[in-house]
Amino acid sequence: MIRHCLFMTLGLILSMPVTASSDDPLNSPLWNYMREQFIGTDSYQFDDRVRVVVPEFAEDPTQVPITVDARELAGQIERIIVWADLNPIQHIFTYYPHQAIVPHISLRIKVQQGTAVRAAVLTDKGRWHLGGSYLDAAGGGCTTPSAAAADPYWESHLGEFQSRFFPRSEGGRYKFRVIHPMDTGLVNAIPEFYIEQVVIRSASGNDLARMELSPPVSENPVITFDVREPDKKHSIWLRDNGGNEFEQAL
Image 1 (cartoon, one colour):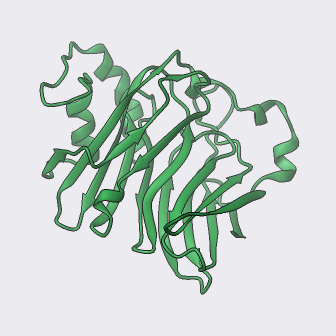
Image 2 (spheres, helix red, strand yellow):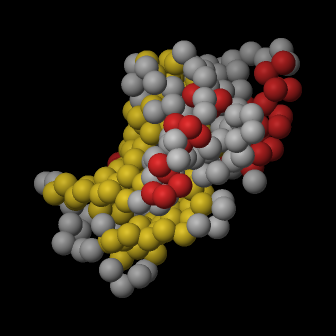
């Protein structure tokens, strides 16, 4: 997977003399490398309509709330890729929204240090629209053992869901939480163990949106997403890298 390649080469890249790219509004020394890895040579533009909302400072680097809002590009979106430039595992998630799902999603992530957090949105015209924010953090979130490592509770509750629905003036909002350690594999003697796929389904079982997650998503993930038709029923299906599958009506 792409994130493994990025992790293996990050130490080499950071040890090289690099300078901030002149076209990057966040002045990240890894901008050009990250761009090549995630969107290649495709056409792109920095776009204020793609908003990445992060706190001013990550007080808890293992549970940092982020929101990606691309609603102003709604109806044109094929894929959203989100990453953190200076994390040891940069990729956070890739999102494939459906017309019935609003391109507005929130979750919590782990960060290892202060970093640019970016969202690249691919439209049906074949062009990437990029937004991002700088997240200030003391760090260490990616190499901190999960609470599950010292608590056997999760073994008997793995995959348990809690969810709520919030009516809105236009559509509705789901917020769900699932018990899972989301181990990064960067802690000694604790192997990588994380949810890698999330699918939002209609009541008839049709896939409406899909997410590919990476280990920087926080332990016991809390994910919020918006739907256009609040009277429709939805369910969530997940699978982790251990082959465990979970499904729950929302």
